[in-house]
Length: 250
Image (cartoon, rainbow, N blue to C red):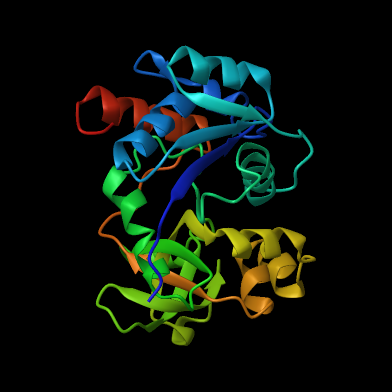
C-alpha cells in the first residue's frame, strides 16, 4: 500500500467560456467564483492550493483574496495540461507526489470530498483517483450532460475500479454512478497522461479520462453521497447564488 505523502491542489481556470463568459470572475456573495473554489481547497487542508490561470485578471482576483496563482499558457487543450505546466513550474523537483485537479466551477464542492479523492491512491496500483455519487433517477441516467462511470467493486467499501465512462451508455452495461470531475493524479501518472495522444474512445465520447483507460492506466473511484452543483450556464450561476445566499452552501 502506497501512502500519499505530499499532495498539492491545482485549480485550472481561464476566462474563455462559451456558455458563461468570464465565468471564474462571476460574483457570488461578493467574491469571484474562483475564490470560493480556492476557499474549499484550503478548507480541505490536504496541502497547498494554487490557481493555474490563463489570464492575469483571474490571478489578480485570487491574489486579492490571499491566494497563490501561476500564469500558464492560454492555448492548453485541457485542464490536465494546464495543471501539469503549473506544477512543473512551481515544483520542478517533484516534492509533491500527488496532484489534485479541482475544477474552477465547483464553488459548492465539500472539503471532505476533496479529501476523499485521495483515498484510492493508498493502493499503489492506482494511477488516478476520482469521485462518483449514486445516480438520482432515470432522468439523470438519460441526461447526456451527466457523465456516468461503471466500476468493478473494490477491496474497500465505497471504492471501485473504473471500467468505462460514458454520456449515453447501454443500460445493461452498468451499474452506473454519476461521475464527478475531480481527479487526483500520481505525479508520474500525470506526466504520462499529458504526453499521450488522444484516443479513439476519448474522441468518440468527448471524455479525456478515456485516454488513460485506453493506455492501460488504472483509475479508481471513491463514492460520495452527493454531486456538487457545477456552474456552466447563467441558470447554474443563479442556483449557486441562491444556494449560498440561503446559508446552505459555501
